[in-house]
Length: 517
Ligand code: ADP
Ligand code: MG
Image (cartoon, rainbow, N blue to C red; front, side):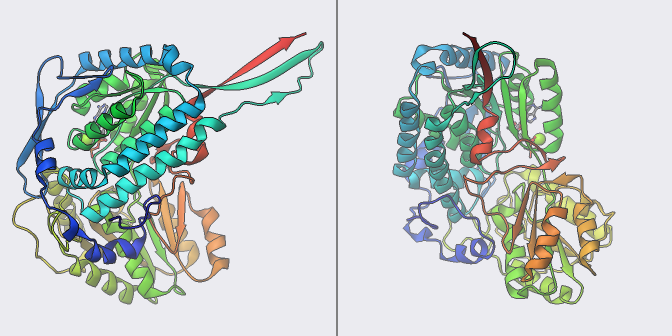
């Protein structure tokens, strides 16, 4: 019952919005008893291979975004829990059981974990939807992606090699390099892809032989705790993976500043990314940051306008717009601007908002009431700044954190809605007159995560790609992700790359070895 096959999820433009209507949600037992029971459990954190409450015994409520009701509790971990977890991760890192484990055995453990993810596919999908709010079809893409990443990265465990080199210093030397795991990783992730982001941190860490303390977002820790159960079942040695739940200011800050952490991997907002980089300045932990975006979608005059409109809608509305690479700024050539904006607005107005598990749901709720208020405020700000609202539908469920997809047209460069990341289903749109002008506005952002170009003219595309300051450029698509291709940004979108062989470097140190003979 997978949406897009067994490969890594392809989050492809039009497909996502349109095909969601065909997601086989009917096969789903909405609100299944097992998942309900799991959500309502007395949850514990996974530290040193044991399941434990927070040292201080406190908990945090978690909410069902589709109803706004509290549906469970997680431990409110803090600095003392982080201490225990980092200590456990250090001991595991140094244990012969893990440090001397053969690469092929690490590979096998990761493949076994992928098997277990697939075996528990339906449960993980429903859990993700009920905790995060996203449509079932999107959770299917996510969980497929998790298993796909595990399988791709598992193979790298056996392919981490050094090299030999011919040194020129006097005497006889044999010299070579080895790659060693960086050590204990502290990972902090957001709520938009809870399992996906967890896998982007856990998988490279364990494949390279590191150990990890992961702090999921406080809004969406439930599926990550379930993933830790699966890792336990697979048999990773105790302390290799630790999950500490809690708030950013308590557990997150303690993890980011912990002197026992060798590398921090963070995905989240640019503001908190800065805070983390500051903390790492003291400990000199290595850091990778995957932060915000305000990605331009550039539609050239020669493009297939219907496909471009569909793609532009998918680029922003996928995952309720809560995507760091969301195509949140639409620039359309002036000759086709009116037509494309009308099409995108019509697609937006046709999107059916419903709880993620509901049959026919095309867009779920946002993650939280805070996020709902924030996004609605941005819509008001855009209107007061002079944008015109191209969308008009107003139907949405009464309860829950829903926001209708909104297109703010005729925006201008200085508006806040054009410059700030909204992280919701709000698109800003403006016309452009030529290639040079659009490159200039596309690059006139503090962010530089991604961009897409829609055109049938390869000469133009090849001219434009190198001029765009972004870590990812898509052409005639937006948002696909594959484990073989690096992901990450420039400027205030952060530094370092995830996925692909490039990601491994962030989890490895190089040792140079000299032998004089
Ligand atoms: P958002 O505000 O959209 O939730 P954040 O960047 O604040 O995005 O959150 C991403 C992750 O960072 C979450 O796991 C959150 O708990 C964590 N976080 C928030 N504040 C801090 C902080 N000061 N130090 C470390 N982690 C933090
Ligand atoms: Mg925050």
